[in-house]
Image 1: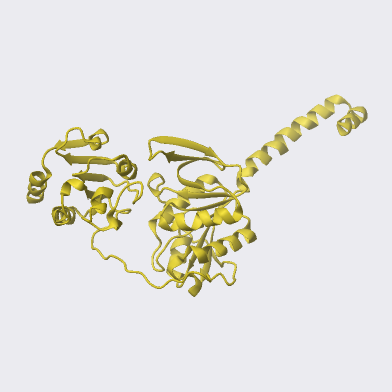
Image 2: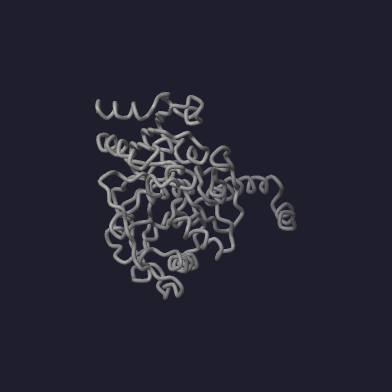
Length: 350
């Protein structure tokens, strides 16, 4: 106030008002707009040391919506091909690589201190990963160490601090505004289109170094299911069976149909709990979230937990002998019939 009064007495109020108007247009507005330029996001890449998991491209799309620079952290034992793929993603400005035995198996116990060291050095405003088993294991640990509240499974970005997510098994939409200095987010891949490939590659640098190996957890090995069919999260067509299949042997009808269509095979939790199929085929709130071009639900009643995992599919076809089954409420096409008669007929005509 005293500064303004001094200017008034010295050069007059008319000149002062002009100067303040210029200041308002020249300095204040760029400061507000510049807030987005100060945003920076770290995307924690998910991969198998050979290829980049598609969910990372979806996470980058969400990161681009936040504004500012996007950095991808790639940690593993042999990350050369993965880091090259990450550097080519559109919107990525930098790739940080951390290579060593400490990251074997991508254990959350080893990745967490690496991400924290990276955060201490670069001071990101957002840390993002896909809402997969990997992301759900790593990011809550990071949020706890940073003493912030994670925002999980977001389906939309309204601004740098406001996000949209589902609650109550997808029956309600919640808008969340985070006031934490660092926003820790997991992204539902089905709601963000994967970013494309850029014409030029981003810069690749080394991540902060240190002894990040876990003293309490060790990666021993893993047994992966091998299949010629596409994975559930990447398939354009999914044929899914439920309790109505009655046994695991009857799933052969679905396998045959899926092979003819080039589709993946999924299942409801009821079918998994009954032992018909392994749990890596489970679709739903406690399984995989999918959104294929075509989802065929066979013998699935449509429990709310299952609908939460597939109702974003572009086209849904339901086959069930119960006309009151909840699955028909979300289906684009429904057939009330005995699946043991209908599915063999479809297989014959395909």
